[in-house]
Length: 96
Image (spheres, rainbow, N blue to C red):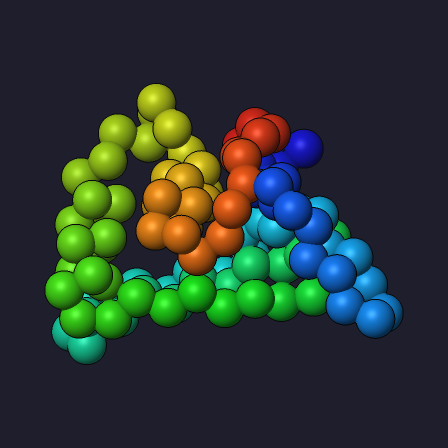
């Protein structure tokens, strides 16, 4: 099972209930200091998280020097999104 973040409180819209997200896309633009992350939800819905400027530079620096044999890139991204308060939940699963 791929690593996912299980939401503390599900997101409910009239048509769907989203209980978790996984990373589906990652763009690192060093020159423009931009990070774009797409998350795919329980029912295929998408959520975009962006970091620009110093926040993006900081995130790219942390990812660039991370020991990915300890934690996967996807787990680090999901944990950062949670730490920054973009979503609330807990990461589970193992790398693909």
